[in-house]
Image (cartoon, rainbow, N blue to C red; front, side, top):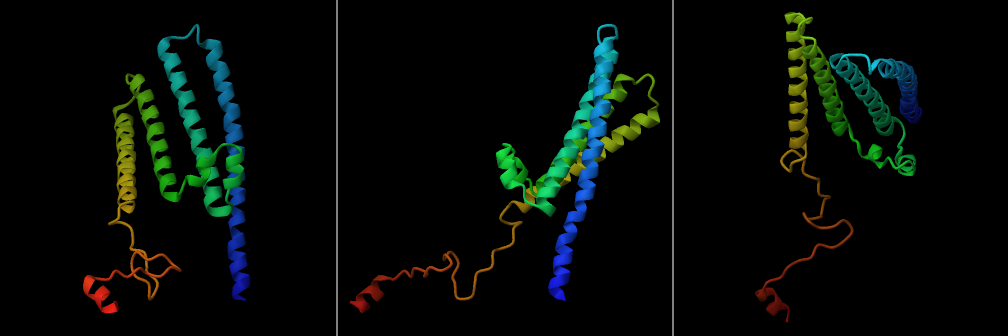
Length: 198
């Protein structure tokens, strides 16, 4: 009974495929909307003001960051939780996928959110005359909260990477520290012991 439950629990990870396929479908629809925005920008770039062109470019940049965020989440989460993509990633020259652990993924996500928030904040500053003070202060507060979150995650990840933050590896019974498993520990002898053996 226990083995059956273990298999069911392990197989349940494939339920996540529905979410990742949904993310891919959403990304495809988002890409279609992005191409529409690119066409509109290209058709008006020579007749629009520089201010409007800059806002349109910022919107396109914001969209590309969101798309990259979706791809990063889908690939890294699938590799971590469902099935390893190391072999396929190496064939596609994307070996970085197998190197993204949950800690790195959190920092990447937080950094992407800060970048997206920063772009939105810049858009508000470019239209500051039409922006209410309440909206601007809320945007600044949210961006500051994202920055603090990234800083906290980076500090936590740094602490986990230090010797003080890592748990000491357990040494098997009968094996001394520094000895390799399966190899006898070298015993150093002093001059008195060498003389006694002679």
